Image (tube, rainbow, N blue to C red; front, side):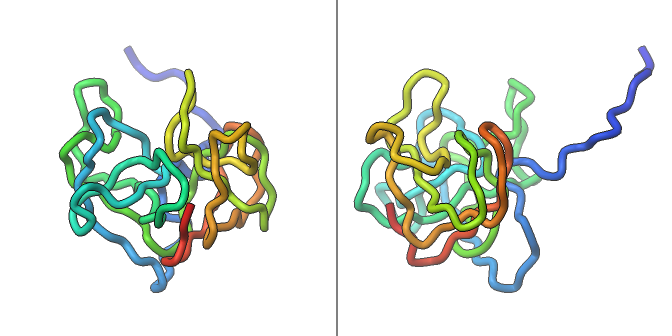
Length: 164
């Protein structure tokens, strides 16, 4: 069947996409230590082998390694989704700007918070602007660069010395 309709409003970006090609961007390669696939644009911390592995955050007081950065080099899974799969290598933006999906509305300069406890419909490593009853912690060394509504995409800047 032929495609008969075409969108006129294409998305500006998607989670995990680099916001710019700044020479300042610092990208690491890590192996996912998670047991399930996860989205791009989420916060990650060092794994059991900190030089080679990364996983989603589950506690405060740790160094934020960076954000899962999208790559077209990743294998598309059986579910036709391009996700970070267990035991696969993925890119981690350690310094730079990246698009993320926010759980609540944000404006430039807001302090991003990282979800460390996830309930139904929530993702570890997701971004928001408050502690959400203790389920999220502030991410020092990070800031929102653009505005976005709840569930929309914003630009987040991360620095190498970020921590949650």
